[in-house]
Amino acid sequence: MTSPLPSHRTAAVSIALALGALTLAGCKQEAKPQAEATDAPAVEAKPGTTVSEARLVLPAVKGSPGAAYFAVANGSSGTIAIAAVSIDGAAKAEMHQTVGGSMTPVERIDIAPGTAIAFEPGALHVMAYDLADKLKAGSTTEMTITFADGDKVSAPVKIESRGEAAMGGMDHEDGH
Ligand SMILES: [Cu+2]
Image (cartoon, rainbow, N blue to C red):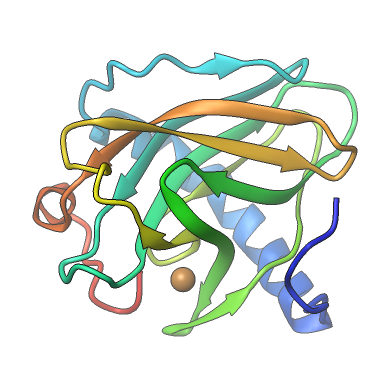
């Protein structure tokens, strides 16, 4: 798979991701009950890999990018690596990591066996650009994750308005 992004694989990003992975182990449990009843079932396609709780938060201002959040669990015996994410209805989607209030594009996310990575507000997220009008709060779209080995997994994505997302108790103001 070719990536439209230039290489960003810097030491800084790797360190940030390593730190993120460490703290996520603690955060993940608490995040679950907070997510309200999602009718979208977890989808399991790549053996052992589960994508869950996917949601796309629409921008407050039309034309601005939206942000997508989800969790990916690696139940397999080998490391898997997310190489790209695409969202149906978004012309372009990029993985970003928020560090100290600013965002850095991320090319690849490694997930060690038996661990999970959460894309969540203030941390890893997917920025979705040029959103189609068909993406309406309350409806659903689909995302596809492409792994470094070429495998792909698709999962349903719940679409939320920004106000709805804010009621979840998270402050999104500092750049997704
Ligand atoms: Cu971003």
